[in-house]
Image (cartoon, rainbow over all chains, first blue to last red; front, side):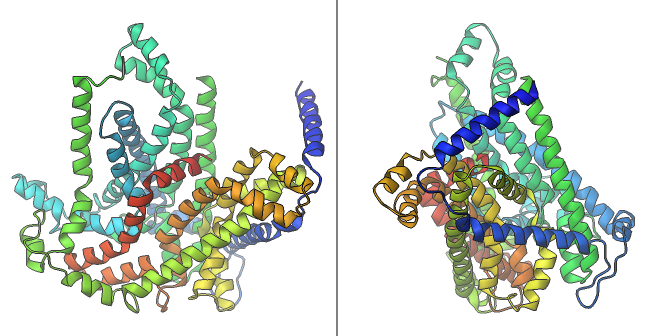
Length: 307
Length: 278
């Protein structure tokens, strides 16, 4: 059965290539610069992977030390914390930013008069530099900043915290900043997805007596499944790679309480000169992104198919 | 009948506008704080500035980055434009070849570009840094253009290939029947037809490069070629808690993108949505 299909596919492909070749074929030479660049990139990534098994410090010879770097990552307090924080942050980010983005998209879809203006407004932070955005929020969360001032003003001085300097809160301030900046992005992806939900279907469901909630769960959400897959995968990658916001807001502190893999790669490699160890951390980050992004896509795609 | 403007829609609109107002607080703070005096920053953080005080702006403009903010803006602009032009020139040609040649080789190369998109750059970063340091390209804008062109090539080729694959070949064939050679066919017929996706590529990669902080932090910080994000980062480090000055620097740094956004928001939003779904 399956061989039949591949044979069939191969036959059509050969036929189309013969027809599509046209009078002149495009020479491979045209693709050479682009291909050379991507191969160079892969070589660099491969070399990085090799470094991760060495104790290289940037000068002289690299010595092969097997899995020692990786053992150290999982035993060292700062890096083990960084791995855990990255996962926590990425997971919370994916859930929140998608929920809020979807809510905004549903709110702005159809009939609302100011929808174009509001859409532009919610999307604006997406194009700004994450670093600049983080500095604005640094003021908001500062000990003498806007949030604590607001809490004093509404008569709840007891709720004040040194948000960025507190081991409990530091990591979550980064989450707030990321959600604020990227909700507009998921909103736009969901708005595009909502255009594929036919009005007639929702009206038919309404006529049949389906409530708003039921229409959402049974009609809108299943039809949005492809948009969910794209938005969730994209935000997962953004979440796992987080770097700018952390460096600007807390620099990983207080006492490693908000270190992430991104900041640890930077610090170990380019600040401390532990090239081998930094490469090992980068390999952990790379594998995490690859494995989780692929796993999530497979799971969500399967759900798309079931629905 | 479901989508008429009813009193429930009014309520929904009201909630959305209220959300938008809260959402705008950071942007409001950014503008107002930069115009305040130092004492106002602490006594009245949320109120409007009593008088417009631009001294923070001149301070930030002169002192951010190794030779002022103007120079940092120039570096950022050169780096961004140079990389985007290279990406479009090389990427569109590569994608054209991949899309028009069919067969195993083409599929394999396309897959290579596809994997390149999700590969985080941190891992390749370390060997690239060493190589560029040894050939003396660290600290140069040219080195950054090479880096960005390589790193964003997978995304560019992916976007172009998707577009070219559904582009009918009839135009090219007609041009060739009329005697146009390959170069003429490409520059006069194919490339102009790619305009929508060229726009998407330019917007997407341009914003990524302009806002990027990690690469210039590693390759350019401490040199005379610090682009906006690096200049901003070191400037904020020197002016801890002087929020009016910091916010003036932040405002200058985001202004070019905000202006661009005001004029091209429709294209930008479409570019992001379309480019990412790709």
